[in-house]
Amino acid sequence: MKSLKKYWLAIITSPLFILSVASTYALEYEELPDIKPGIVSIQIQEPVRNVGYTVGDILTRNMTITIKKPYQLIDESLPIIGYERRYKGQLVGIDLSDLKHVKKEHSDDVTHTLSLSYQVFTNNLVAKHGSLPQEYLRIINTQTKEVVKYRIPSWDFAISPLSIYGAVKIESDMSGFRGPLLLDNSNLKQYLKVLLTVLALSLLGLLYILGKYTWLPRMGGPFAKSYRLIRRSPNTPQGLQQAITSMHQSLNTTAGMSVFGGNLNEFFEKKPSFKPIKTEIEQFFALSRQVFFEPNAKHDIGHEPIKWLARFCRRCRDCERGLIPDALDSKV
Image: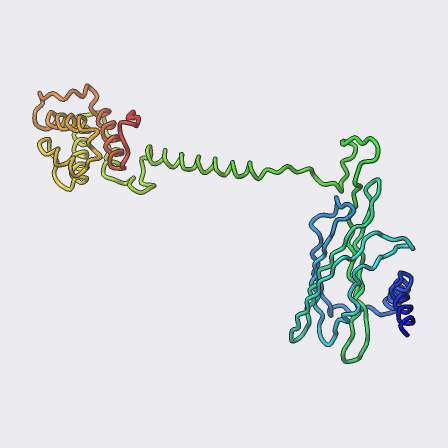
């Protein structure tokens, strides 16, 4: 009895027996009718590329198959791992190396998630055509017991040789299947992003320093408004009086009190950011005294007080923004 079991085991595990069984299944699939449209839906995720595979590579197809009830998949019809497929009696060199099957049942249908991994076992001197084979699934109607078949389509790709045979000119070997030769530019993209960020921050800083309008915080202070007014003031006695009055109002608003030449120390205690331009503030009060009260008073400003006021107001604007006026260009 033991010898008979060993003999039977040797028969069913022999390649000829497996091939004969597979041929019988193939005949059965050919005789089965196709399932009606609309009962089975499939989504297939193929490998990311279809060229450049060599012997030993593994290609995986992920698919989701939904079968409406009362039809049901016959699990025994799933592809067999390790079965060597043939075409016209010759081995194709592509075998199923792994299969993962997850079934999820719903009220109206059943979803089957399949992951089929095929391994390449063939090579050639030149690139050759390869194909992940079409698979047939058997499906049964649980009410009528009718068995039908559903075909999973094949997928074509190219198998590359392990080495080049003979002399090859690269300009004559630019096959359309090869695809473009891409360089890794991820580092350059990262470097470009850093440079663009630095550029954006630099432009924002220049806008903050040189800007005339209230686009950013602390850009709408009293001296910013006075600066715009002084730049438009005419070079006349009336324009000069208007510019000086605007500067007095800005000083008073900034300090929260009336600022005069005699209480500048109190002003600097409240607003220490204006200390670097103490000399210019004293010159401004001398100019104001000469314009409004003492025509013969000296102020050491020159013969173009409007231009000087514009430069002085701009430096006051820099102080109210928290900048260092000595490090800035005071030209208008």
